[in-house]
Length: 410
Image (tube, rainbow, N blue to C red; front, side, top):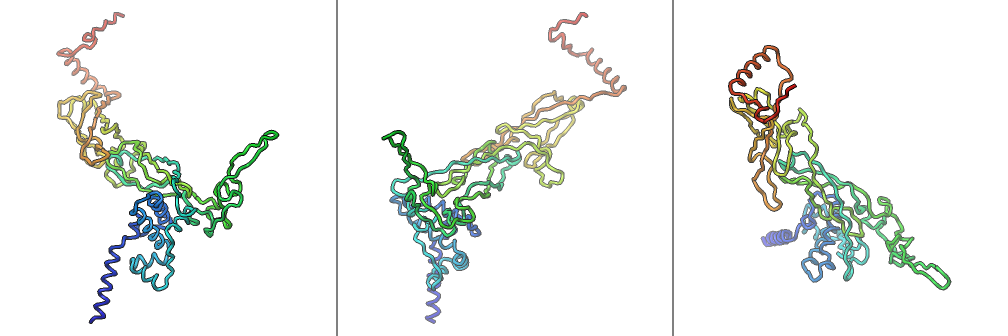
């Protein structure tokens, strides 16, 4: 009875330890199905963020830096990642204890593998930051009204994943013998007898890198960077202003020599486009094409016939951008003047605030246009003329007289 109990207690201890240990995927801020490219990218960004040289005196940052290196060390190896996914931290420990190939890199050595040098930034050294990158995306008005999540891709410069930015196929780099690792050389020029000018120039052998490689990486041709398409997710909140600039931190062009700048995405409204008949989404109707936006308000033009404008007794149902119906109508005998504007509160754009959600909506302005007939049949023309003459003689208004215009004598 004691032996089974002992095994149960041991299993319980391992289970508690596994729960206390931080999940490697959460530590690197990646999903469990992350690719090698995503894994390396996460390590590059986080190791720079928590490097002890950039967080001097911060023990928490130091511990985070070590933990990030350990997480990458395990997940970057296919075998240990499989064991971790199946058995967790305890499985990896048992694998190493049993003679498995646990690499166990020093965190600073691992950092050096990615960025070169000693694994340290150096006292007082500030990391260079690369330029920001700007891109644009166009979305239909209905996406600004309803809110949407969209995937998009950007082609940019990335650190070569094959050589991890070293430019070397085997990861080995030698100090440049010409510049002794400084990246620059001093050249002397005699400009006159007894006068010599010294100029500091980029080393022609290593091109300013301070090192050379024996076996050039076949993927990046020794350039340490390649161009790839990166996938991103855009979240557009309801009522987001047009031309809004959304920042993705450290997602601009990458380089082993600098910290990537920010990717700045400008969100613009796409030109109107009528939805196809085959689309089943009720929000993608032809009506949605004819709304126009100004700030938090929407504008709509409604066309009426002469009879409708004059006599009333009509109803219009407009499908709004989210599919709900806006009803316009006039009772019989209610006249609509050409160019008349009707204002509907709460039927405009959702009101967007940067720091809070809201249920506020702007206004919808409906402008009425009256279409007159091109011509009338003879009988209709006689009836209308007789009716209008009778009305004019009874109580009609002569506009020339009301405006004080001079009568034409010719």
